[in-house]
Image (cartoon, rainbow, N blue to C red; front, side, top):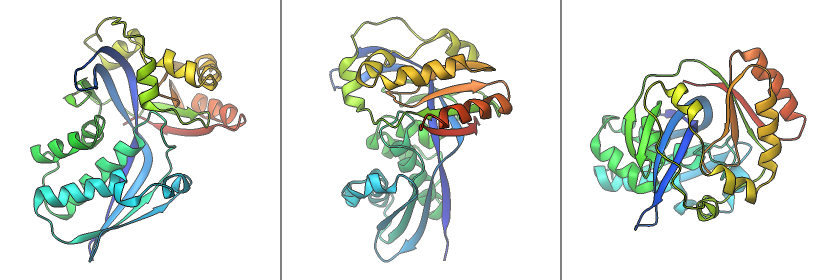
Length: 278
């Protein structure tokens, strides 16, 4: 029996400019997406009926949700409807990324499920219908389906691929606080502070900002301590909050400096993921 395993890599926003609130309730964004080597893992195999098994350190958080309404099972159901797949799938989600943390965990899981199903049923990974399906699941799902460095505009789903950033050491840190995306966007002051620049992704990111950082820090002041630690660490090229928080990241010049900062952050009782960009 064919078994497909897909990594659902953590997503970070190198910069995130919020330009305006749209009539449909979403916001027009300009952002730089980057992806890590590590994250969750989705395993899919054919089965008589579709089922979802949750494993991993953050499985218990999702166990309280209705499994039929999980983004993973929703992605599987819509894939079947869109591509005429009548059989079921046994899906296992090995959950290692914290929930509601600004690194696209749920979106990455849905995208990994779509990739696994596409491979299983011989659907090209660049199929336009696959991306349309992803867009219907959430604003970040198309970027996670693409899974590479990209500029995102509109809701974040109008994507322009960019050159890979290379294997840069990166550290993700979350203070153990789940932050509501809706609450953070609701706290945005609606001030347009200008567009994201053009050019080299790291240079553009360094000159950019995350407009959701102030409202997220107001909701979760623990972010202040995380950013202070990362910004003060040796060998850091860029430190910032990702997405709507509360996870923050720092990109380092070498893995030794990253690992030293990871030890310091871990000693605070925070969740850490030392990894590399891809």
